Image (cartoon, rainbow, N blue to C red; front, side):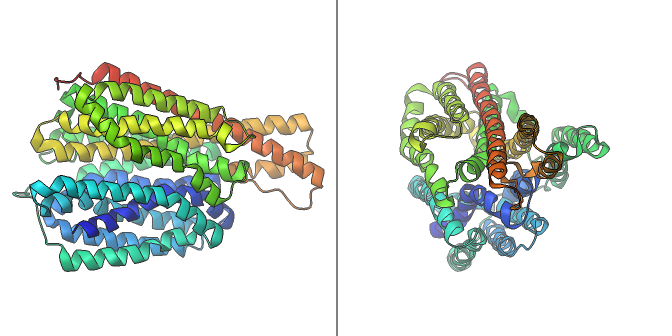
Length: 495
């Protein structure tokens, strides 16, 4: 049973840590724009964030083993389709199906442990699961970078197939079926539909706005419609008998505060880590393997310091680490934003990644503890699921918002530099059509070498400006998370 849970969840962890590394490569292979590669991430994140709680409820009612197995099979089939994708549109659609599979798979990985392991052995089992999850997250970027460099980005998705086969074999032969006692009542299909459509409308509007313009009727309709649908989601959750998100839980200041902190902090992390591989690979000219290795200090610090942070909670409560941790992470984002284009990894990127890893390590364990402790024991699982969904939705929205900001900033910077260089109008028009690819913009080989060198420098510097702005926004969000913890999370001994 534990093996099935580890194998199944490892697919989602690998996907979460390595797909961003593949974005520059698939952008080149499939001739994709920046908006296209945003959709590669967002189609998966949208389905996972909106359906995560519904997937957990389905497992409780229909059988955790059954839903876990269905999610694993669907995730594997979609992964195969991703690897075979001949066009960017195919890949985006397959990623959406992969997100649906993950929404069935992810909640079940820990639910299987809770349902089948005796209480006196459950802590050790979850600890083993956590250790393997951390190990998978650590190996993922390096393995993924090597696969992209040695073979193709397609192998990142095909890697899921043998893992899924082993997961299904163990699940169907060794794992007993289980359901939640008295899991009756209906499923919140209305809430899931409203959440998916509302988030989808906002994300579509934000991603497409740089190309279509904010005054485009379709963009206005998408943004306004998305906001209205999310308002409808909140109204529905307040009225139906079996909501995905019981709003009464947010009457706890600590629960509301921890979820607001989650929204800010994971938005900062998701948006920043979407753009970091583009900076490493397309501007700094790192290989995919080097880019994956560049992120290792962050993951290793998370693994090494999480237990220390857990002990801090036992001694001081969650409030102090949740104030200090996001502040440290904010400084890390700020240092990454000041890293510029040149210089060695150790003097430019490493200090920011180091502080970011320390800040997140100080924050994550106390955040989980505070979420679980802010509600009654019988709601602990639901509270954890809501917080997980909030973190996924935060990254979903951040990639869309940061992408719009970066695209506008890149376009204005490139236009200014081309004017300063007095580039011929024909070349300007050509580059204007490539602006949507950001740092991946291609230059015709027929241009003189000197002009190509100047244009490439202009593209790189324009992207660096956009990257710096993104990192400063991430730093501001992390600081906002710290402020929300200071103002809303109760000190130790009070809920």
